[in-house]
Image (cartoon, rainbow, N blue to C red):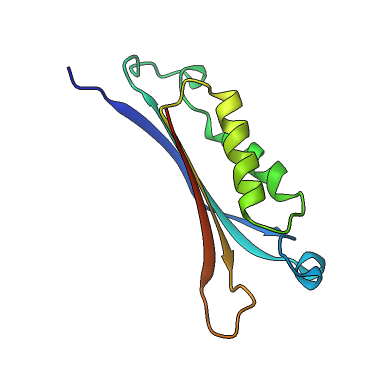
Length: 121
């Protein structure tokens, strides 16, 4: 029997945050983009009720709260977001969190640096 996964995603959620290894990055901040992609078994997905789905408002609130905390590495808020999503929705089949730092301070033109964390059940 084939299984069906339902995926709910937030993509390119823009935050101004203060993540960076160097003190000046933590002082002046920068633009970051967050993706959260979650998948769950869709066996009982005929409901039209918010309580019966993965509420992306909750995903946004978790990301916003974690992005407001300053860290040296973007891996840190990515890990915290991933862990919070797994705590809130323990039956997920897959969780992916991507954080992109726009125009990182490098000696060249770089659109963004990115870290991705993926959890599979």
